Image (cartoon, rainbow, N blue to C red; front, top):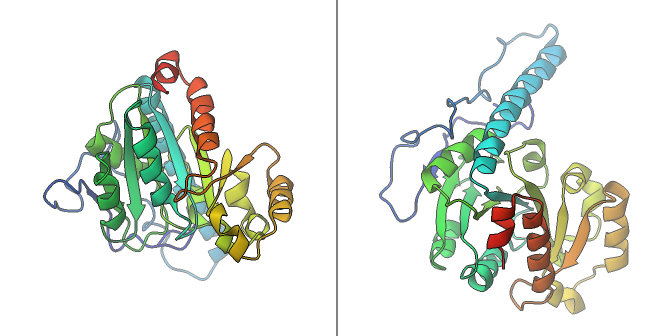
Length: 278
């Protein structure tokens, strides 16, 4: 059990290439460049004395271990000039549809690959694979987020090419994924207009960590009660540096703004990455 967010590792983590035969959950290399380190299920022995203090210490240990592995991932990605984008959202926001369109429209011009995070199934990975994009599925079991060790194993299996872009579609959850640094270069929160304009204040840490907010399904605005100005104000209250880009992943509205932002982010990386972006 993870003291930080309450999720469990008991069901195990599976890193799966949907084009390959299934393997044992732990039949993978644990890196890039580091040992497997699941600290979530390990902690002090049960006891009622000083329980709160022990919980805090365990949380610190879990996050410290994760941060150490995240730095190794960051170094591994930097050495290969790979731009890693962590996509986070609640379930059903349209992350996979967004990725499908992005791959179709940019995939011929820049090398893209995807790490898909879900508790179970290969559904989303199969959708991405149907676009021709290289994809690895990470099933977290009872876990509610990806962590740095899971991404390390996925990157080793995925083996993305140098000077490419890796999208990490995190588990659908507006709380836990924000707590765990994966070693990514940038974070994007995808939210749909069907979810309500108050989400930035209800889940401030998620929106506070975002470098970009993609407001998806804007084609549904005529049919839902969603106050755009109120939403923008709430985002600004928790995060003054994040841009909001309005998109419809199904119809294509606003997608050039998303692609332009990706180009800007690629410009923050080594020149070799920036040169590969359209």
